[in-house]
Structure formats: C-alpha cells, structure tokens
Image (cartoon, rainbow, N blue to C red):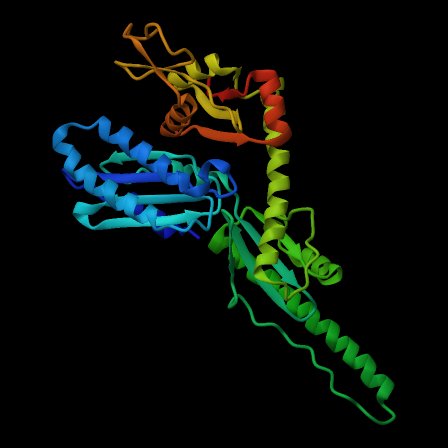
Length: 380
C-alpha cells in the first residue's frame, strides 16, 4: 500500500540539472487480452520510442540508460496486479517502482522530476475504507485502499470472557452473575473497539466504514460509535466470521466498493446530462469538451470506459482538437493528427488540476447514447 510518506518523498525530490527522471505508468492487467503473452512490454517499448523520437541528440544517451533500465525491469516482471508505476534516473541511481491493484493508464514522461500527476489523481479518486470485524469477544480492524488491505493487529487486545464453573446452592445466582459479567465484558470490548476506530480515523482518514461479523455485536458497535465515525458508515453489513481470511475480507470490501462506485458514476452522469448541478455549467460531446479543456474551463471531465477518439494537436501551440486536420483556431498553425486524443485530454486535465472520472456499466452506456461518450462540468 503506497503511503503518504512515500508520495511526499517523491514530490520533494529536487531536480538534478541535466539528469531527468523517466516516469512510466503501465497497464499490466492480465484480465485484458491486449496484455496477454507479455504484450504490455510492446506497449512500453512503443511509449519509450515515442519519447526518444522527440529528444535532441545530446539527451538521447541519458534517456537510453533510463529506458534500458525500465525495459530490463519490466522484462522480468511477473504481473500480480493491474498497473505498474516506475520512476528511474540511472545517472543518480534512483529507481522506484510499485504494482497497483487498480487500473493504470499507459503514460510515459521524461522530465526534471517524477511525473506524479496520474498517481495523485488515483490517490484522490479512490476512497479509503475502514473495516471493523467483531463478535462478542474478538475484534479485528482493517483499512482497504486501492485494492490492498492492511490489518491493524495491534489496534487492540480482545477482552476475553471466561466462564468459571460454580457448584452448590448458589448455582442459579452464579448463572445470573456470569451472564451479567458476560454482557459487561462484551459491552466494554465493543466500546474499546469504537475507541480504536476513533483513532484510526485520525491516523488513516478512511472515507467509509464497513461493519462485519455477527449481526448482534456489530449492531451494538454501531450505536457506540461517535457521530463523526458513524457518519462514515456504509449502510451494509458484511456477513463474515470474525476469523475470516484476509483475502475473503478484501473480496467482500471490493465488491461493496464496486457497487458504491457504480451508483456514484450513474449519479454523476445523470447530473451531467440533466444539467442538475446548478453551481457549474456543463458541456456534452467531444468537440465542446475539447474546446473547454483548451480554455481551462473543465472542473470535472467524465468519459465512458472504452471511449477512444482520434483528433489533432496544433504543431505550434499544442492546442487539442476533435479534428485531425486543418489549421489551429488559436494560432493558425497546422494541426497534426493524433490517435490518442483522450490520453492527451486526460493528461491536460490533470495538469490543470481538473477532476477526471471514467465511468463503466450503465453510466457509460448512457453517456455514449446521450453525449457521444464524453462531457464535462465546467468551472465557468
């Protein structure tokens, strides 16, 4: 799980004159036919060739060393996740890489510092989940973020409830006392869990909280939560035993996360098409969205999964267009055709600190039908 400290360290890395950093974001998802038989290596080589072709001769030697290191690493990679991030500067012996269990869009940059915009966008887009798995005696706390799960085993110690066998005429009284003590310990245990969740919110700042375990103790825990923790509760309880395997817990959380994400995507598309957001104007369709992006008016760009339009880029000023020929509307220079218009639009949007939302399922179908696959909520 990528930590805030790691991201901060990358962001604080100072540029070294004459020694740029190669940044690679690579889709390695083996559930996609396009990535099988190691075809993701071909995607990497294509991106690196494209970068090299835009460099002057004095820079190519340094770039070639970085590119060779990246290719060497990827050639020995056995993909276990959906995406790979790699930063490399051979001349400074700098190499950082992580596999991510969330989708990654193919991108490569060679610049003074690590290209962090796509990573920051992913961190911003994905919500962090907290999970409390409890019964009357035990409790386990987890955080789930970007497809990874972490168990906080030292979060609290379970309060055990043990029965001491009694004999004699006080048997009925001892049973009553035992029951009372059992309830008291269970209450204290759940109260302790609630207290630890309070601290975990401060430490990990999770956006949503899922309760799991038997219905009765999980329900009692719900009522013991503070107002701010309860406000993060998902209105769905996971039916899991307290000693469930971590992998099983992760699968259940990801299922809930996907359901919530689909509902949110449908609402975003509904608001976009209906113009229900009274705080921002909006645009529908490729051409007006590209124009709004070039004019830096996009607050949130929304596009359907699988949307892959072609277009053009001004050879002089770099403005993007929904057409692949003609002259630039801004400077009059020729427009060069490009096959990866959406890639360029996403990159441009992130540079402008705009939000980017890819939608799937019913939301994507509706966006295709009503807006040609793309639209935007505007700043002005």
